[in-house]
Image (cartoon, rainbow, N blue to C red; front, side, top):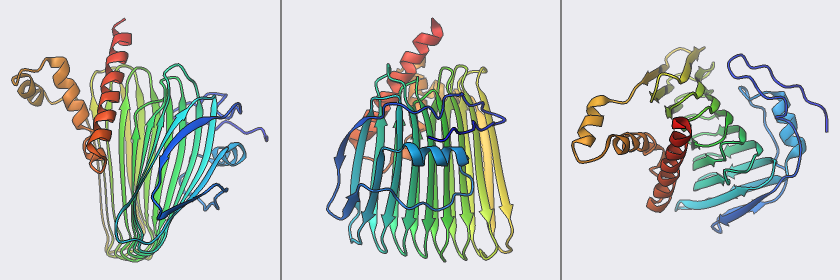
Length: 349
């Protein structure tokens, strides 16, 4: 394997062993409908604009042991697919290609879990081709151990009248670097991104959501919501691009961060780059502590302060999970609650 240079990031230093190769293994439980065809082959890649960097692209190409192409066939009903990976080894690299055919409808969930004692460098590339009139929702749920690292690059290309929604729940891992972008290539294409993040202890995360309007009458929405506690650090970049040839397009980007104590570092860098007339672009970012009135109201209903804080934190993720089943939402809420309790005990100690 070619020796790769470690990128130098200004706000989030990277460890020297992020491109270390090693044993790669993960067990998988899947539930795939007939209208989604899965092939184990290396997907064709298109170029990203705001990726993590060329070194990451080269590494995941060379090290990937999980190469998969999913083709979503045209259907009148939403096709639901579910993948649950349990990662066991120090290295897990994967390439996933989703081809949403014209007129197709699907909700695909990919979840990653791990025992807290396991360490993994997880490198991931996900590419979506959304054809004319498709309706696709991809949800990635990352629940890696507090020792692991997660490097994910996700990109979608959306044709005329297509709708692609990407939701990422970034809940685990000691270090996370995530780049998600959508390219709206056809008239009336719609892109939607949601990011929910939980950072506790000394977790470090660098998130980038980028939306590229490249055709007339395209619409988009970016929403990021997260909770930070203890000594964690977060950098979030939300980018809206209106390229030439995208008149009458509308894009919105918002981030809301809840800070549970003064020791956290939360940097937000919203950007709007406009090179076209007759467009509407909005962006906003806010960081605040828990709403004391809301806290008091919940406590007045008989809950302890600790439980009231927990309920407010869980409510931050409810919008991200609205398409999941009630059982799956409850499972994720239970995982978040356990994580908050464990990290609180470590912090108090």
